[in-house]
Image (cartoon, rainbow, N blue to C red; front, side):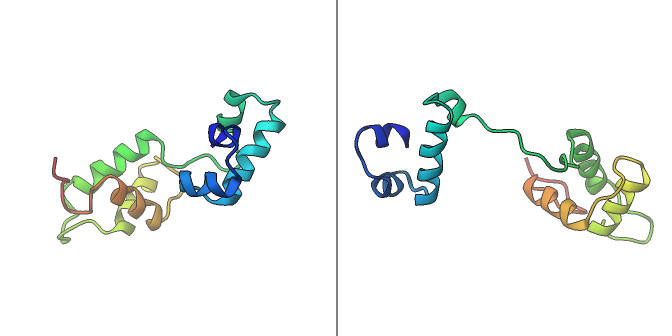
Amino acid sequence: MLLLLSDGLTAEEVADKSGAALSTVYKIWNRYFEEGKDIEKTIREKYRSGQPPKLTEVVKAHITAIACSRPPEGRSQWSLKMIADKVVKLGYVEGISTETVRKYLKKSSSSPGRRSAG
């Protein structure tokens, strides 16, 4: 985007060429000037405050292992709630929602009760 802007294209033209929103082009351009025209500082991800992610690589591995293991007696497969409860019971996290478990399993191409192909 910065190269296109420096070549004299308008912000609208840069947005069209890059597929970015016009507001993104302006944000990048403004950050470039705020950072003293330093491209490295402009494109570097800035620190974001907030809660750190609950799903460390260790927790992800445990979720996957549970989802791929034999379900409890009397069950044909693991439910998302059962996986979330098991991860908490084993002390890997203090709490985790079924939605977080679902999103992770979807992202990792796993699903409760089935091993992922590959």
